[in-house]
Image 1 (cartoon, helix red, strand yellow):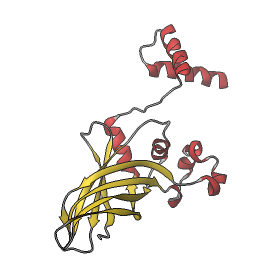
Image 2: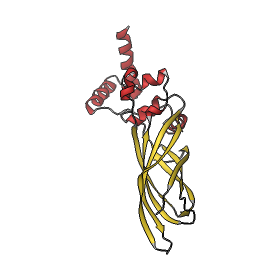
Image 3: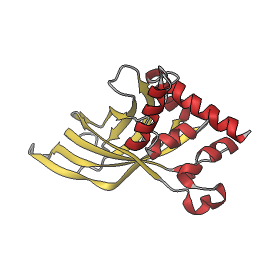
Image 4: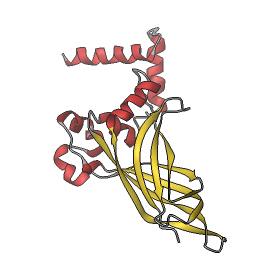
Length: 215
């Protein structure tokens, strides 16, 4: 039975995808180099291991929405499920490198988007947990099928700049915000009532009123 090993070697933003996407280069190694692997239906669960990096003052302030007050992070700072991804690894013997595309969202109601946006520098510690099905040839030539054990993992530190540059490419000087429908209708009515051409004008007007009230 093949005992496959996995390593994430690199990552880069894919510039011309239908949606913001990071491509991870995953090396798959079969220690039995002479054994022919027909294909691998590979599934991957990706976790953000938030407790495996330090945070500066600005990052801690931005992450309050996710983890609460920094004084309580010893209890609340935990790993976040980022996403699931899957690919078909083609036939190989020994080892092969395959691209694992991971679509990304800029929706700030999603915890992963909040986390990535809060980081100012350094890397994002990720844990890739692999599973799936291996199709391979036995010594007698028969096609065999086996499962990848859930204990197969690989760690990788994604440069925070990769995510930031990707979002700047797809959404230059922009961000996404989802509202409850009733809140949207109230904002829409305010925008229409004041004859404002853009949503930015409506929000900036409301913020200016708030700032003036505070003063």
